[in-house]
Image 1 (tube, rainbow, N blue to C red):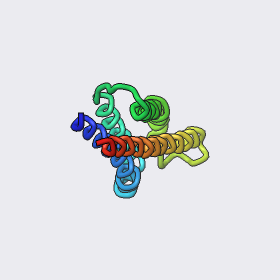
Image 2: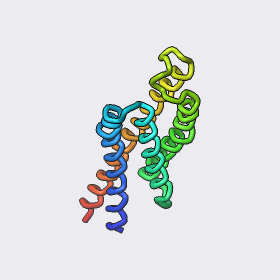
Image 3: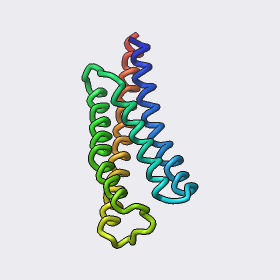
Image 4: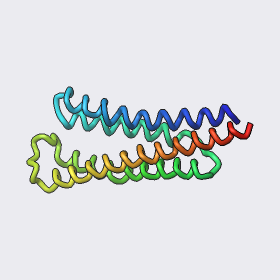
Length: 147
């Protein structure tokens, strides 16, 4: 059981860490290095889709407080990917090279609005992950005190 608990905490730490690293290092680097925002957006979308597939294939766990937070993280991630990001991708396809579209164009305005929501939703996954990490560590600490 200790090994399974270790795997759960490790998975959570990797998930939170990957969100932080992606948002603070990878995405800004892509948008500053690649020749266009369109190319950077394609890499970001592909990276998020790949991460989502890895999470979906993870397997079930019994439901208690910590697991419900994992379900919440998954639900937000799925809603972001299949809702917000899908709509963003349709807008990107319709606009072509986004840099050539005026900021006042309705499609660009909607894309920017959706991008803000995408960032907020991923940020909420990050915060819920920190809360989850706290509960997991607290639970482990309480178990350690009993022995």
